[in-house]
Image 1: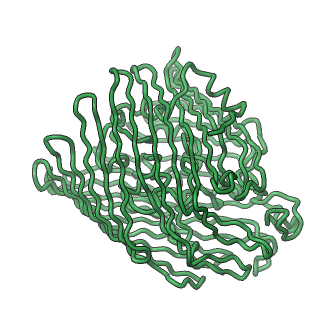
Image 2: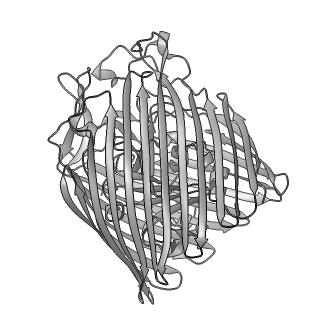
Image 3: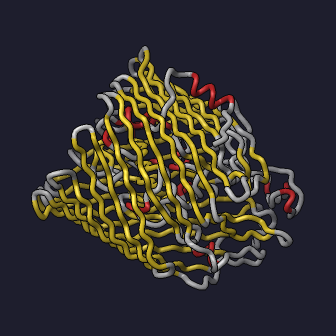
Length: 627
């Protein structure tokens, strides 16, 4: 592996006495219960996989407005965005494609069957209580698409006495954010409801000047008369949970989340209505009903019936892409004399309604999976096996095998081997438009085989780890402009390899909480030797914070290395570094004032060629959250 460190990455690594793997989150969460790593509750300190847990307190401290912005600062994650807030974005987990990560909301799969990815940019943080990020292939647990990992959102649950919450904030770029909620329980009933609205004028999505349509300009056409104005974003979101506990062994819970967004962007003269801007109207929705029943002292059965929607209207209704996913899952968790057994059945029915004529508009997947997790003395292991039957591509068997050993009370090692797969999306196979862009119905499923090993240290005061991973992917699908027409079409690479290290460290020194992470990665097409597009070889993060009386303040340094905008190392994107600051003042037990300054040195950088990002910006808010 040939990896060169940027100056920012070296600075982050050298700033602390250790640099090691994804343990910053583990040190911080301690005995927090994690579900996503095994699909069963497990202490974060016992998890063998690379998992990051982001709780509500950290979300509020971050001052970010969207899930994508929050995740962009986590180890192993890189992002790209076609403009400011709410614009079409991509999230790359450990260098895999943007549609190689599965999003769940309260156990319900959410995303588009046409693009194959979830609209992370459309989910505001006001609705989220906790996020779990699982890095590494997870098809043996969650089926197709989990080549890079899984991100699971948990919304607010009701407990205790009636409690209202309120947040009001405003910032630069005419940004406003208002949210309110109530939660609690009464007898056998529990409830939680949150509503929010986020709005910003943003910046002009495209950067100028660019000439007319030309491959030499990477297709980012720019018309100053039409595209120089700001392109805003608005998100109106509501979530709710209602639960009923029949007795300690049986309960029923309904979870709902719906986000409606309007995203303005530059039309470059293609707007049929003649205006400067065109807009996307999107809907992300999930609804799930779960029945949890303890059938024996060692047997918990959970049945979930769910549906999710991903709906998009482009060019003010000219184009429509609607996905509906009907889901059924029956999971059985059985405690054994040694460890815990997982047995589950899943059914997924994906349907698409679109203005684009797809040769097929749906597929069904039937799945059976099993797992066994256990620990004996200093030894720990996790074994998972899953069989998926895809109505379009047939059977796929995936597995995961992990082992951990505690060398001493403060040192441990672990290793794992896992496989994953992804069926081509409907866009990959059948998409066509008037510009000549089109899919390929002969594409094959993508498959991956990942090996990783980790060394971890935790003495209670400081923690560190180093994780090495090597993910080999066959039949990797990449879209690119193809001569002579320069239309976008998908192509498959027989072999791609993503190899790298995740390093992190966390400690408390002289009252300061300090954490750092460094990602070193080589993601390339092994047939051509070229790097995969929009993946940096190195990125780093250093965060420092401290409490002084009623104040909590801190900052973070983020550095990302050079990337390329398109396959074949075309369109260089320069590396960049950002400094963000935050502060919080607890007025009293229930009221607080929060402030955040992002990109304080007003760096001009790109996440996608020809598209703007936010300059220096400030946001201030007041929160009421009775304890």
